[in-house]
Image 1 (tube, helix red, strand yellow):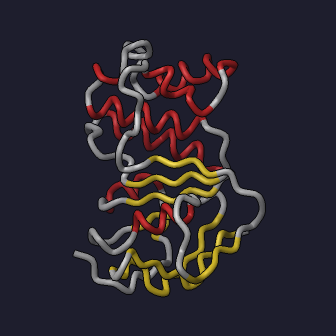
Image 2: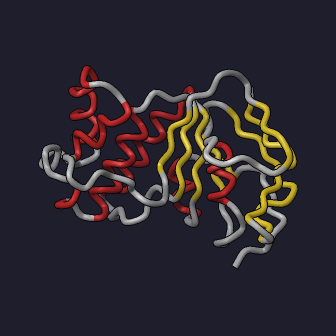
Length: 196
């Protein structure tokens, strides 16, 4: 069972961002996408998430998909706590699970701190916890480990690995060591544009 992206093209005005891009994503594997900046990785992620539509080409889904996404930006409500931000995608019955997840991510002392008071790496972990707790069978991660220190990063990658066992997971990264740690497979995707 795979998600198949077939010959996707996308322009923004007269700027060609994706041209005849194809790939397949297997369930239970972490499919990693690497490449230079500007070749359309985030645009591809946004198309797969349903946030934008391709100009041509198609996506063949293996069934009903629920997508959760970690964006390049944290997209937190700065005036709300780490816990409230995590619970934005579920109801309060998930509160204990959210607290356990934040604790596992090394944020036990920051559960009730407002996002505005958190460091960049802490905000990143909250946004990842929020994506993991959201109901999903397809997780899209767009450079998720930016700003995480060397001690914290393996813990977060372990959480993502555990989550990926029976789901589709696509991770955009610039770091081959992240692909290796995740046990990821470089997705068979060829970007036709050169980037910047």
